Every structure is written in C-alpha cells, then in structure tokens.
Figure (cartoon, rainbow, N blue to C red):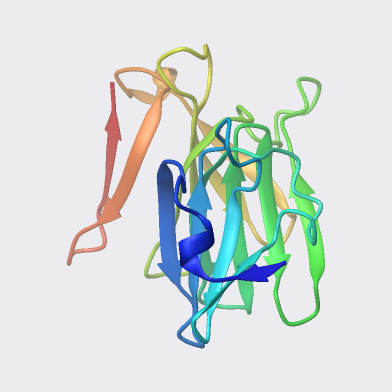
Length: 174
C-alpha cells in the first residue's frame, strides 16, 4: 500500500526511525485506534506500509536497527525480534522460549543496537513487564546470551544502548 504522508493525519506515536543504506527512511509506530499499521518505508517521496507485506508478529513496533554486516533490518516489537532482508524478502523471527536459555530473555524488545564490532545487542523489558535484560546475539549459533539484574544491572528493563569512542557500551535502565 503506497500513499502520501498527508493520508496519515493521525500518524500515531513514532517509536523509532532509521535511514537505510539506500537513503530510504523506515518508520516504526505504536499502533493506535485510527491506524493498525506500524511499519512504513518512505521511499522516493511515497510512504509504503509494510505490515501486510511482512509476517511481523506484533503491530506495536518499538525499535529498528540496520545490520551493517548484511542487508538486513532488525525490527523489535512487543512480541519478539524480527530480522528482515529487504532485498530478498526473507524474514526470520526470534522469540523467548522459557525452556531454552539461549533464546531472548523477554519478547518486549525496547532497543536494538549494533556496536562497532558488528555485535547485535537487544534490550528487553519495560517497567510494567517482569523480566528481560540485555541480550547479545551470537551470529554463528543464531542464539542469544542473556545478561540480567544478576549481572549487576539495576533491573532488567533496558531502554537504551550507546557506544562511546572507546568502544564501551552504555546501558540505560530504570
């Protein structure tokens, strides 16, 4: 579905946006009563909805990240992590499995960050959801390493991840 921005007067709450390697802008929205679509691509002045084209497991998209090593976009939702290759339309979904400690620690993906070494970090949880923490994606095994409160975080709600010039990660939490 393609349209102009003027068709979306009540666009909703923008959770995240990013510019891809081709100069297009991806926009992640919170679903609202007037709009059940939440992932848009602004390309050549046209706004395209991607919700119906992709198999996204939630309409509330919270975070986006471009994978600098591959032609991928990581999409974080209230219900898991989605990996999308826009060139091939290949889609992969990651979700917490309580029986497997090598899966995400929580399905509420609040932030996604790829550091200067190409490592993908996923922050999960929020103030209303118990559990979560920081997750490091192991590209070789396609699994996650969990870091939590027990690893000296104040709590398991991770809201932001940034890297300084010395390659130290700064993590924000409650």
